[in-house]
Amino acid sequence: MVTLSDGTRINGKRYLAGLIAEAITEGRITLANGEQIELGTDDIVMFMKYPFAQIDGPPPQEHTGADGGPLRILIEYADSDGNPT
Image (cartoon, rainbow, N blue to C red; front, side, top):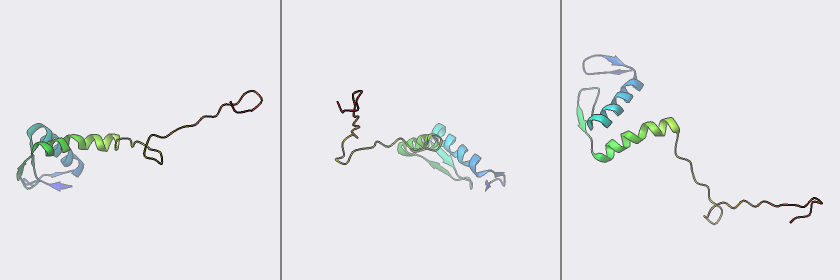
C-alpha cells in the first residue's frame, strides 16, 4: 500500500500503473508526496518499454554456435538399408 499526500491509501501495483500511464501521457510523474518530476525523452521511452517487458518477458535470445556464428543443424539421411546418403 502507498499513502498519497492527501492521505489516500492505494495498492502499490495500481500506483505504479498510474505512474507509468502519467509518464507516457503527460511526460512527468507525480510522486506519492505530491512532488512532480519532469521526464526526458529517454525516461519516457523507458516507461513505455517497461510494461511490455513485464507482460511478454524479455526478448528472445539468439543462440549461437561455438564460433559465435549461427547454430548448424546437421541431419543425416539414410537409404532403406540404413546406409547414410
